[in-house]
Length: 343
Ligand code: AKB
Image (cartoon, rainbow, N blue to C red):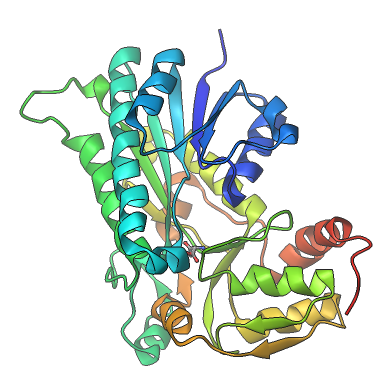
């Protein structure tokens, strides 16, 4: 039996690179990738085929689908929250129209294969929009249906795409009586801010956490764009990859929902700075809040309630803040910046 083919969009991003390595190590799937920028040489051996191109290019997507029997899609390509506020129309095009193209392609693949293609979609805490810090403190660990009032284009896009995925799974072409097997099997996770030892994120608003850590490891002073009390949930990258594979492999019958919060730990900018300083005592952080970015972070919940994910498909994060630093972030990051000048 040939191994099933997985398509990863946005494979060159933070999650994409980590996912690629894990799929390669596990060896259950053959991987096809698409990203705007060509995949670095060292990642190419992990892939059956790589395509450099735009997910807005319908012809390219149809070509990819014609050449491979894609059974799983990880649709990771997106413009993140800060980048999206700089160009909201572009964010809408990439995040919504791009997703619509992928949903169409994956649905056609389901028809071709005669079974539902699994479509895994990283959504975000950006779908939440808390009106005040008092309400944020009162809500604490937010449930999936609470405060779905995003204040960023990215958050709006993610929330709508969750609905599109549910629609494609349950109702797409209902007038034409699309065969059940030809439908999609869409599964979305609402991610907190992610922290990777290998990559520094760009274009996000949760980036203050990872930026602070990477700056300290490089010996650079860090100017934090939120105040010390700004608090949101975070997750170490290995847990993010575990959760994507966990929800992918869950039996359809056990999934009562299409969208799940996944949590790990919650920390304020000050708590991250303190933990960074324990590992990198020369770390220097100053707080110069950017009014817009700080407001976005204030609108996101301080933690997520992931009971549904725990109950339906056994989600359990391996890393809390302390373990993330001692067992994953600090050892890998120190190696990465070995020899970097210390300021
Ligand atoms: C962002 O900051 O935009 C992302 C996210 C929280 O989804 N990292």
